[in-house]
Length: 217
Figure (tube, rainbow, N blue to C red):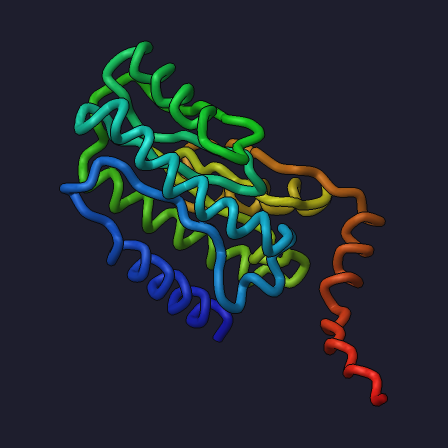
């Protein structure tokens, strides 16, 4: 039953990701977790909103700088931006990084752009499926909180982002390496101590206080 549920979850995740994949759009925005995941996301709500803005503004800036010459993915997690994809030369790679660095609220840029021809739609579809399988594995893992991770796949390389403990980082990495389609795993984590994680969990579990009623005169 567990295997069937995992397969179903992988299929649903991959299908939702494939729905946003287009051969005509060379630049992709990573997208931050929203809705129900915002409650369990280890970023503050402000950081999540800022990440959305960084991705949108960053995508626009890179598009202005490079036009249709490149395929660039912009993914922001807790104001740290990951650039993946393909560019025609070193100058374009640096232009993309400079464009992102000038976006408001960006605190760091990890430039993983490859100098090579743009990946094919088939390659990108395979990456989407791999991302779906990784996410499904994180959901299935009882000792991990899937919402704490952001997963990006480019040409078989899986980038794992998130605010996690060393134990969680090692566990997620080990799991990801065993998944078919994964050639390499790159960790871009913000490490927390177990004590910090416990405090964070306690703070998220506390209900928001209702505004105080005005005192009667």
